[in-house]
Image (tube, rainbow, N blue to C red):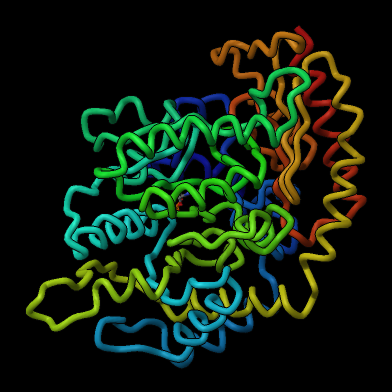
Length: 449
Ligand SMILES: *Cc1c(COP(=O)(O)O)cnc(C)c1O
């Protein structure tokens, strides 16, 4: 088996995610034979450094020996069991540990089998909560502009990335969009904090006017990842929590991408010192091994559903692979690595290296901004730096960076014209400097004419 042969077979039978398949007439599809640590190796033996953690899921490298061992041990005991009426030690232990690690007040865990499905759980639960409390009109959701919460219809409806959403508009429930606190749009001289707080005032106006019909607000804490790694100030979240309490609206923190150390703390909400009513966790939860989503919520929400069966207050939602034991073991092994290796501390050094390595790009004539929150670093390529005019999307300049990086053995997958690093935490300082050099050359090429 080699690349050419596999690509032919692949294109005959597969339809890939988030892809215009015709691109593969000229853009090579890359079949991967094995992964080891930060490296992926294709069937021709070429290696690629996985600088985007395979779509933001991988934390401690591919084929990590400790996670592998945990899954292998589980495999001989129990691969899966129905979670309704039955339970098992891995799911119990994982729930205990998540409750311990997540902000105070979050103490019940419901499982889904991917991020979007977990978002649907939080949406349904929040609306159902108000119904159980005798407020059936609180059914609407507030979302932030430029947010992303997944691709299933409910999750898509509460997102706001037009590229993914517009076509499906007729299928989606109506939501209320509040302006994002995204600091990219701050005025010259305005601090990120001031800008984010200004947007909070817009949100308050919405909540004040429509509190009777609003169920919850859903946010990606600190970084709007799919929306181009746009970042905002923690004070927005602190203020949001207060507004939610004031106007009786539930707060859903979608930490699917930002959770597990990505923003510099284990969870992004910690930086705002808040507890949401729901926290959705997926992606890094299993170290990038298996699909799993944990929706962590409060005793107060749980109790609103807890009653005699005939009251019909129960949350009758299920997914076949809810709480899969293999996925739970991968998650437990991942949490062990965080604890044993003091990852949050060691990431601070890596984040500093990323900042220093990319600093020269700030002066690049086609880079509007180099921004960073913890282990996420993004470089925004633009046509006009002073006016922040983007390149026409048809030019696909980010794709040129992608191609340049691949030729040089790095997997960078820009979001439009935003080049970003979101590496596994096992990356070394030398590797950070190396991928930065490649990104800089790629940006040179992509902005050359
Ligand atoms: C990826 C993502 C999702 C969706 O998760 P899937 O497992 O891809 O369905 C939801 N919210 C955020 C913030 C994400 O980044």
